[in-house]
Image (cartoon, rainbow, N blue to C red; front, side):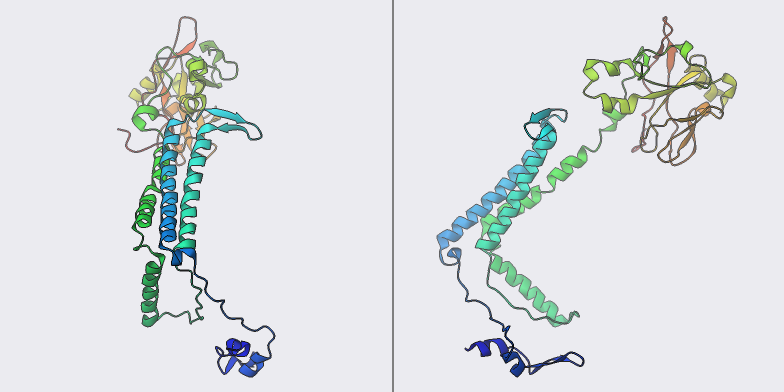
Length: 361
């Protein structure tokens, strides 16, 4: 077949329309940029050598198995390697070992999975070049039937049914693939009964000023004063590694209210007063909406505002929500005074602090 025949036989008598000109076979023959056609097909080694095909199959399966091992290793590292373990590497600085191990395992897993798919496509799947002419966007029944036929042909050409080792290892890798996501989702938060329901506050824990690290005394808190406090044990070496986690639950606000300012029923007012020291009251600093720190105090109304979403709590009415999206009052901490005049907790919070979660019971 001549170059002219190769470049023009596939053309219709005329191409184009009104306003676009007309391209005929004769004009195409004079076109210096002629269609060279498809190059001759050159079979791969795996197409003609069954041993090479089998070797490629084993290589692909090995890569899929490496991906499975990497996915499982990522879950093991996420669970076993401490999140606070930090290593220093030359040129990389300080790295969190948990993040490093998790990233390396997942990286190798995805690299092996992608490499296996590429190697499969390049060595075992059909690689014959095909030309598909453009067709109208509208799909008819015949086209759909043809698409289904092509899909089945593609499955057959891929060797998915022909190479069971690849098929099984790939399916196993795909089944294991979602597990790291499930593993990570489980760690979005602690289970309520073991961590969210309890804080570091306990009987006798001193209220410590986080700025001076000195215990708060009853004589330091006057009407209209707002003070911050944390449990004394928070600053012990044993709690140093979990400082932020514990602080997010144990931080309290300390205010002093006159007894006549209290609201609510007689029983509510009595409880709020009994849990105070001559009107000195401690409330959780953690907003019950999404956990932001509340800190904007209006001493005339005794209202406490959360700056994130404007939830407003009335400290003179048991920390009741009077505005905003928060659904629960700020929990009050039962406090008393020790013989040295220091403010101390009488117990832990009687209800979970912070954002609401599923049924609290």
